[in-house]
Amino acid sequence: MEDLLLKFLYNTGFYLADYRYYIMIIIGITFIYLGVAKQYEPLLLVPIGFGILIGNIPVFLGFGLSIYEDNSVLHYLYFGVTTGLYPSIIFLGLGAMTDFSSLLARPVLMLLGAAAQAGIFITLLGALALGFNPQEAGSIAIIGGADGPTSIFLTAKLAPHLIGPIAIAAYSYMALIPVIQPPIMRLITTKEERRIKMDLPRNVDKRERVIFPIVGFLLCCFLAPTALPLLGMLFLGNLLKECGVTNRLAKTASTSIVDTATIFLGLSVGASTQANVFLTPKAIGIFCLGALAFSMATAAGLLFAKFLNLFLKDKINPLLGAAGVSAVPGSAREVHLMGQREDRTNFLLMHAMACNSSGVIGSAIAAGVLWSFMYIG
Image 1 (cartoon, rainbow, N blue to C red):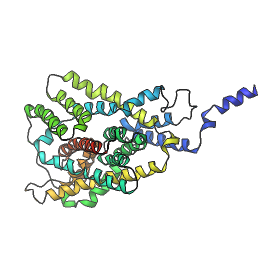
Image 2 (image 1 turned 30 degrees about the vertical axis):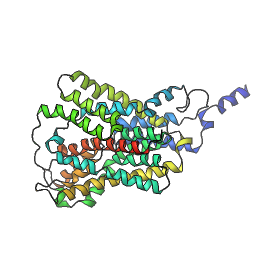
Image 3 (image 1 turned 45 degrees about the horizontal axis):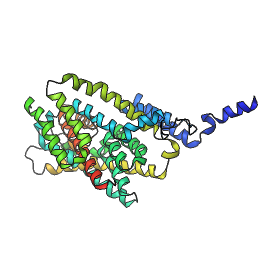
Image 4 (image 1 turned 45 degrees about the vertical axis):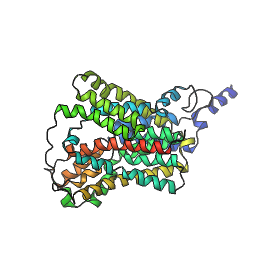
């Protein structure tokens, strides 16, 4: 009887765990707290945080429980991450939820979404200088786009062993937009610039809205064919929304389908952060470089907006440059709130969403470019 009791105790997680598992459990609980109590991207942080808890219950290998064991339930769920399936489905839903009207009304704002991607390529050089190989450096750099699904998609193609830390870093910085972006916006812009008011955008008719996803898809994917799995789904979702005859499909794509993919993506990514493969010096380097990437992308958008104002007769509020990253709608909301703090009559949300939506397209194109250059078959 005593031997059976000892055998039972030796098989418990309490016996198998070391301090690293408890650190990861604390991180998981922190993610859940930020999502529930602070409401920082709860649809992302709650499933990721609980996935971290699931992934850091120590188990015996051979029982088919670990996410890294073939034929385990978690391994099958993780298949959607490693193949890029979940990110593509999320882009379908994102397209069905996105209104590109404000972008079409003032196409110059698209340049701010493109400019913010400079942070990706600056971070790429930094990662290479720190000794990461080109595939790892490309995967780390895409964090600067502030787009979790795009970061996961590219990392699955270039450096699948880094999916856990890169996904956690990307979603962490997306959730911390209210903490990271405002100081950078205040540092780079003046009070007078933050008070610049934008004219109401013109009305965009249905024909323009229907043509845009078709033309946008063709132009973007001829430019970067490797962005096809993401942008193809994004523009399809938008066409379903705008054409007016597929409302049921658009509603399904923007609700139940994208919600299901988000749950499985968050759970799988969180569960992949097992302490024995996650807590490494590389992971710490990724978090530091990820913060640099996101900060540089924000700064690049702000500075480019100020540069454009040197040539524009109708000035744009440079705060909009911070919305050039792909974190929809978090960065657009933060830009609007910053403008409101300076002038309660200043409404920047629609214009910021134009930059935000162009940032989604820009980060997907950047991921496609990095994949085509860095991929080793």
